[in-house]
Length: 205
Image 1 (cartoon, rainbow, N blue to C red):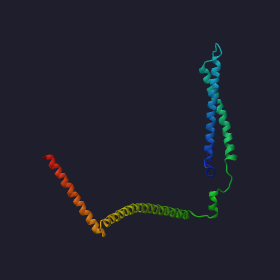
Image 2: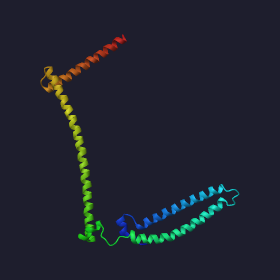
Image 3: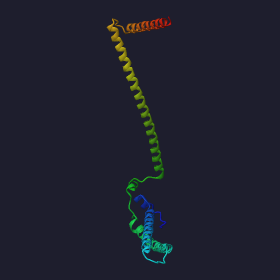
Image 4: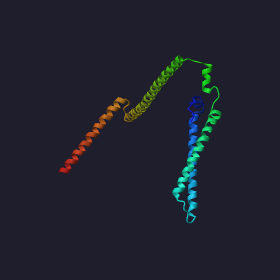
């Protein structure tokens, strides 16, 4: 594996070329192992049909392991050459300017200017969070006001209905109708209380 970090290529592709080649190598090795397993299974199956075969499954397994080791060595040698070609001719980016770096070429800035801009961005983010929290608080208060306003409308509608009832009974003033309502409620309570007392007395007697 190459030790060159190839950071520019990693920025361009979104992945490191070395990691890409490593995954290709692992995929080839996994495929080679699966092929050798299939070959060993086919050999063992065919040996079962040969009478008086002196070759044991253990010997077959040892032979396939040796052949697998030989194939891996050949593959490692070939893969080393293939990796160099890939990293030099395919996954190597020439000296071009990345789109995200064009702005730096047109508008260069120093490290101090970058830090200053970063500080302004942080301040704006904090200000945005504060304004967002304030907005959420105001929306919550607005919802509470809507609820209170709805209850107030219900109360006013109830008072209007009471006033209409008072007018129907000859009381035009709302206060008078309210006093009349309280008096009638007391009378009704007293009558109910008297009825309950009389009912208890009759049960006792």
